[in-house]
Length: 188
Image (cartoon, rainbow, N blue to C red; front, side, top):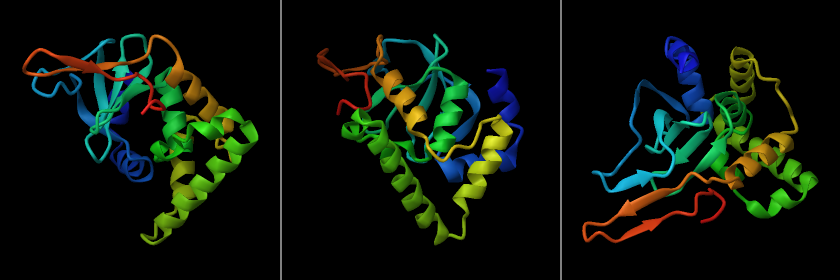
C-alpha cells in the first residue's frame, strides 16, 4: 500500500500509465464496487486503480490483485503488486490477451503476444504516442526488465487466473436469488 501512496505523487507517470496501459491509480483507496449492496466478493480487498471504463483493480487480502470488470467479469490477475505492474506494463491493454487457446503452446503464445503488441503500438501512432518509449519509461520506474518475449509473464498470469481459490463475485437480486461468476477471466 505504501508503494501505491508514493506512486500517487508521480503525476506524469500516472498519466503515462493511464494512456499506455489503461490503469488509472485512484487518489484514495476505496471499497470495491458493490452495485448498491447487491455485489459481494469471496475474498476481501481494497480498490486501488481502475480502467477508463470503470472496471476496478483490487488488492486482495492475500496480497494478490483481482479484477472486477464493469461488464460483470471478475478474477485474479496477479499474485503481487509487482507482478501486476509487470503484467500491465509489458502486456498493455491485457484484455486483448484472453484467447485461452494460445496458452497451450508457449511458442504460439509468444507470437500472439508480439502481434498484439505491434497492433496496439501501430494504433497509438495515429495519436503520435510512442508505446515502446512509454513502456520503457514505466518499466524503468517500476524496476521491471523490458522483455520482447512476454510469454512467461502471460503464462504466470494464466496460472494466477486459474488458481484456487478463485476471486469470485456474487450478485444478489432484489428477490434474494443470486448468481456467481466463475472466478477466472478466461471462463466467460
